[in-house]
Image (cartoon, rainbow, N blue to C red; front, side, top):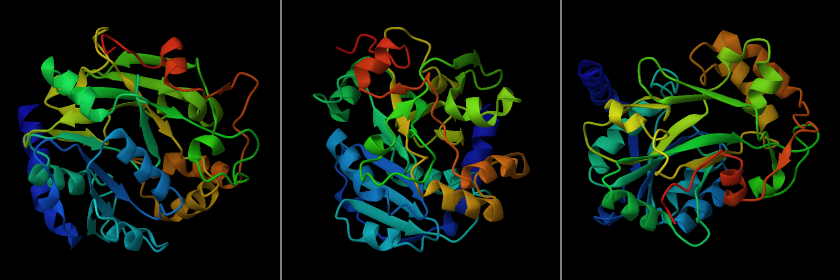
Length: 323
């Protein structure tokens, strides 16, 4: 694993020139600031709410790589005073789904900081987040020498065919989720809790559930230059960073996944041609074709989202000793 980590770091270093700085405000980052890292492409419909959400949680600076947007995303990001922006037209897939690019930025700017790595369609929630922010949470984790915080990715969806919602707030547009159809096992290589299930498995991968998306993530980490993400934010090296769901005294969170906004139909149609978002793109062609047709993901067993306390009561995240 040590040699594998070094190979990933070497790969990150080699690919560093694939991204070009547009505006660099990293000199404004304070020594205790929480930094958010993300790669985006054509996310203008989500951006205002995304930034407001994470600013309210306590993220102080955003380091973002724009991957060839043509919907105004890059211009909008460039004008935000707490954002440093890079751009690239290189392959998202060949850059390990953007992790090589973000890995270089984390290497250069993340060391010693709590770093939050998320996609534009992921909104983090955690116990007591309406009264306590990320600064308080990470202080609690620091005091206990806990270097990473885990979260389940919770797929949110509307009632009715995809593509019909007009709400600006993604959670109001996508208020439903699957509450009970989850399973987990320990990954044989990376030792993380490997969670699968949810609505995408129920609707799209019922015939082959082992191929359904991984839902366990480690989005919040006290960064060291030797750290590296292996597969999105699902697995990390060193291995100890993957043990985020294994301690009942530790809190965990949820990433509310807003993938199924109305733009999903156009994005899925585009992805059939681009094939940039999956390791085995051919496996997911039928999946994207179904999304482009606007299916109804709701079922009588769907649960309406009410907040973090509901997710704790359902066992989808934990308060641990965080009170």
